[in-house]
Image 1 (tube, helix red, strand yellow):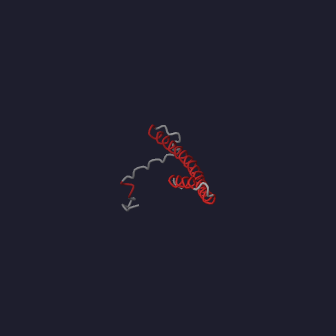
Image 2 (cartoon, rainbow, N blue to C red; image 1 turned 90 degrees about the vertical axis):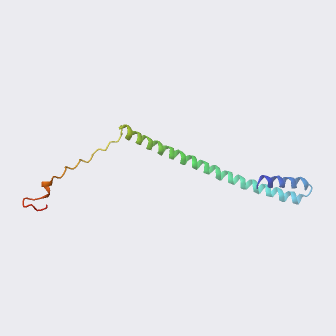
Length: 104
Protein backbone atom coordinates (compact mmCIF):
# COMPACT_ATOMS: atom_id res chain seq x y z
CA UNK A 1 0.00 0.00 0.00
CA UNK A 2 1.40 3.36 -1.00
CA UNK A 3 1.26 6.46 1.17
CA UNK A 4 -1.48 7.90 -1.04
CA UNK A 5 -3.58 4.74 -0.67
CA UNK A 6 -3.01 4.73 3.08
CA UNK A 7 -4.07 8.38 3.38
CA UNK A 8 -7.14 7.65 1.21
CA UNK A 9 -8.16 4.77 3.49
CA UNK A 10 -7.74 6.97 6.59
CA UNK A 11 -9.85 9.71 5.00
CA UNK A 12 -12.53 7.17 4.14
CA UNK A 13 -12.49 5.89 7.73
CA UNK A 14 -12.96 9.44 9.06
CA UNK A 15 -15.90 10.08 6.72
CA UNK A 16 -17.57 6.72 7.53
CA UNK A 17 -16.74 6.53 11.24
CA UNK A 18 -20.36 5.70 12.15
CA UNK A 19 -20.57 2.78 9.67
CA UNK A 20 -18.94 -0.12 11.50
CA UNK A 21 -18.92 -2.44 8.47
CA UNK A 22 -17.02 -0.01 6.23
CA UNK A 23 -14.59 0.92 9.01
CA UNK A 24 -13.91 -2.76 9.76
CA UNK A 25 -13.17 -3.47 6.09
CA UNK A 26 -10.85 -0.50 5.83
CA UNK A 27 -9.04 -1.38 9.05
CA UNK A 28 -8.52 -4.92 7.69
CA UNK A 29 -6.89 -3.41 4.58
CA UNK A 30 -4.58 -1.39 6.81
CA UNK A 31 -3.74 -4.50 8.88
CA UNK A 32 -2.89 -6.51 5.73
CA UNK A 33 -0.76 -3.69 4.37
CA UNK A 34 1.10 -3.44 7.69
CA UNK A 35 1.71 -7.21 7.75
CA UNK A 36 3.01 -7.15 4.17
CA UNK A 37 5.25 -4.17 4.88
CA UNK A 38 6.59 -5.80 8.05
CA UNK A 39 7.31 -9.05 6.16
CA UNK A 40 9.07 -7.09 3.43
CA UNK A 41 11.11 -5.23 6.07
CA UNK A 42 12.24 -8.51 7.66
CA UNK A 43 13.28 -9.87 4.23
CA UNK A 44 15.24 -6.72 3.50
CA UNK A 45 16.97 -6.86 6.88
CA UNK A 46 18.01 -10.44 6.13
CA UNK A 47 19.33 -9.31 2.73
CA UNK A 48 21.31 -6.52 4.41
CA UNK A 49 22.90 -8.99 6.84
CA UNK A 50 23.80 -11.35 3.98
CA UNK A 51 25.27 -8.50 1.93
CA UNK A 52 27.35 -7.27 4.88
CA UNK A 53 28.76 -10.79 5.34
CA UNK A 54 29.56 -10.97 1.62
CA UNK A 55 31.23 -7.54 1.72
CA UNK A 56 33.35 -8.60 4.70
CA UNK A 57 34.38 -11.77 2.86
CA UNK A 58 35.30 -9.78 -0.26
CA UNK A 59 37.29 -7.26 1.79
CA UNK A 60 39.23 -10.07 3.41
CA UNK A 61 39.94 -11.64 0.01
CA UNK A 62 41.03 -8.27 -1.39
CA UNK A 63 43.34 -7.68 1.56
CA UNK A 64 44.92 -11.10 1.08
CA UNK A 65 45.46 -10.35 -2.62
CA UNK A 66 46.95 -6.92 -1.87
CA UNK A 67 49.32 -8.45 0.66
CA UNK A 68 50.33 -11.15 -1.80
CA UNK A 69 50.88 -8.57 -4.55
CA UNK A 70 52.83 -6.37 -2.14
CA UNK A 71 55.10 -9.31 -1.29
CA UNK A 72 55.78 -9.93 -4.99
CA UNK A 73 56.52 -6.27 -5.71
CA UNK A 74 58.84 -5.73 -2.75
CA UNK A 75 60.47 -9.13 -3.07
CA UNK A 76 59.59 -10.12 0.48
CA UNK A 77 57.53 -13.11 -0.49
CA UNK A 78 56.74 -14.99 2.70
CA UNK A 79 56.29 -18.28 0.80
CA UNK A 80 59.17 -18.61 -1.66
CA UNK A 81 59.11 -21.47 -4.14
CA UNK A 82 60.95 -24.30 -2.32
CA UNK A 83 62.19 -26.08 -5.46
CA UNK A 84 62.91 -23.67 -8.28
CA UNK A 85 63.29 -25.45 -11.60
CA UNK A 86 66.89 -25.53 -12.78
CA UNK A 87 67.48 -23.92 -16.13
CA UNK A 88 68.13 -26.49 -18.86
CA UNK A 89 71.58 -26.59 -20.37
CA UNK A 90 71.72 -25.14 -23.86
CA UNK A 91 71.96 -27.73 -26.65
CA UNK A 92 75.11 -27.57 -28.76
CA UNK A 93 75.10 -28.18 -32.48
CA UNK A 94 77.47 -31.17 -32.14
CA UNK A 95 75.10 -32.84 -29.63
CA UNK A 96 72.47 -33.27 -32.38
CA UNK A 97 74.61 -35.73 -34.42
CA UNK A 98 76.25 -39.10 -33.65
CA UNK A 99 79.71 -40.21 -34.77
CA UNK A 100 78.44 -41.19 -38.25
CA UNK A 101 76.91 -37.73 -38.83
CA UNK A 102 73.36 -38.95 -38.42
CA UNK A 103 70.73 -37.20 -36.29
CA UNK A 104 70.36 -38.62 -32.84
